[in-house]
Image (cartoon, rainbow over all chains, first blue to last red; front, side):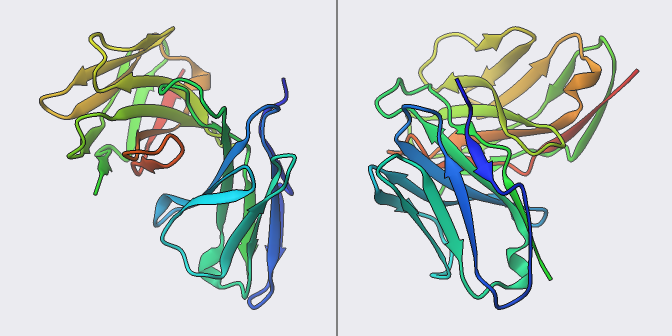
Length: 115
Length: 115
């Protein structure tokens, strides 16, 4: 079974641009969540989607948005990029309705560099 | 608010020896779950082990075990017989109350296994 797939692996953008990252969850997983990882702030929860609906959102500005499609694939978008948005963006999926000890399964991440 | 503390920024261990990575947590919720993840330089977060607050026994998964001391609010990861491939960042995380998808992570510990 294929794992969580994130594309692209690396991105370089300039300040003010926008960017879209993509995530395909494990087959059968309908819940997708996104995390931002930076050296200073560590891993921080961005948002979570299930059945095309955002169910939870972290403490990030409105420039960060996401969506989920009917096939459970998810995208996150960051508009008006700032230098501080440089980070590793990790996507995770989990089987809805699985036992409480079922973990999140993460992808390899997309490393975004803003210059 | 929940909090995860990993006080060891870096640890060194000799190959084939055991090592303990510390994790303390703070929560007011009586029902909680703790996860440990490994992050190699490739970026992917790899699930290692889970401990639930009501679990009667300490969790074990192969060479990984948890030293769970509920009264002290600590959940230390023990890696036995370290291997060179164990060199990575290790994160302790706690599930947010009422959510199976939102995790609060510690800052991580960088483990280096020396030959």
